[in-house]
Image (cartoon, helix red, strand yellow):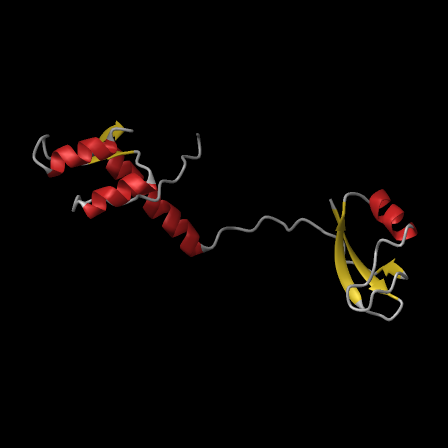
Length: 135
């Protein structure tokens, strides 16, 4: 897809997307490109600034601190809690109802499963899990 800034003979400017530059040319020749303001078929490409990729910027200090805190949280959870995978909802219930040893666990749950746990009074919370840079 390609984006063009266009202008009609009455100086109305508008934007349009086309499959390709050739597609734009074909549609212009067949008068299928019209000004949305006045319906004029006399349309030309308006000057555009080139799309230049921005240089990568250094992350904001707040973002760096947040990423560091979330990474530390993940490390602590992984070191101090048992990973129970997809069995998380069942295991959380067992712990809540005293059917399993009380301990910290983490694992996988769908939003619906998590909502059901909360409705039952089971203390659960979603964690903002960052991917590790090496994964």
